[in-house]
Image (cartoon, rainbow, N blue to C red; front, top):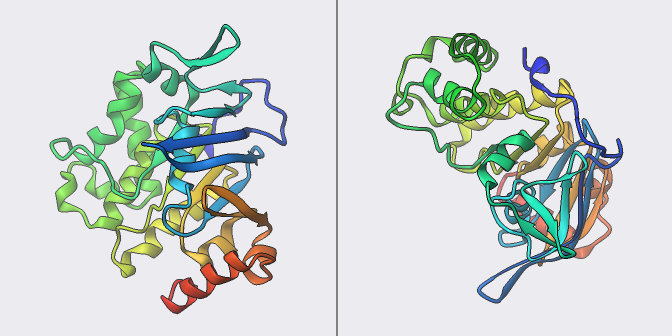
Length: 272
C-alpha cells in the first residue's frame, strides 16, 4: 500500500531534476542561513542532508515546501514554482499560498510530531484529505486505515495521540503525510526527538518508502541509516553544500575536512 501512495509527476520537470534549487539564499534578521545553494533531486531518488546544527538543512526543506520565502534564487518542484508567480520579472508569493502548497503535493514530517491532540489517530490522518482536498470521507477513512496497517498502528486508530509512544506518534505523522498522496516527501530530523529505542521503528517505515520509489529528502544525523537508504548524501555547512556523492564516497571517503570532522563527532556520540 505504501508504494501505491506515490503520485506520478504532472509538471514539465526533467527526470533528472524533479526538485531543482538554483542559487537559493535565505537570511534571518541579517544572518545568512543559506548562501547560494544549488541542489537537484531526481524522481525516485533518496537524498540525505547532513551537517552540523545551523548549516541550513532544515531551512532548505522549508523553502522547498514554501513554509518560508526564498530571499534569492528559485526552487522548482515537478517543474513548477511552489506558491510563486512571475510578476514584472520577479518571483512573488501568490495570494493563496496555502492552496498552492496543497496543490504541490509535498508531504512533510517534522522532528516534533505536530499531531492534533484533540483528534483521534484516524481523524488526524483524514483531516487534510477531506478538508483540504475535498475527498470522500468514507474512502479517506479506508485509505487511512490501510496506511495505519502499513505502519503497524491499525489497532490504535481510535486512540488520542497522547496514548501513543513517541515512535508511534511519528509513524502516525508519516501516515498523515502519505494520506495526501504526495509526489515528494520531506523529513526534517524525524528521529531526533525520540528515545534511542524508538528510532528504529520510524526509520523502518522510511526504508519501506525508499524501496517503494518515493522521492525523498531526509535531514538526519543517522549515519548508518543514510548509508543503507540514501542514493546520495549531501553534506552542508555554513549555508553551503560542501560536498555530495554516494554514501560510500561521502561517509566512508569524505574529501573535505569539514565533512570528516563532522563524521568524527557523530561517531564519538554513537551515531554511526
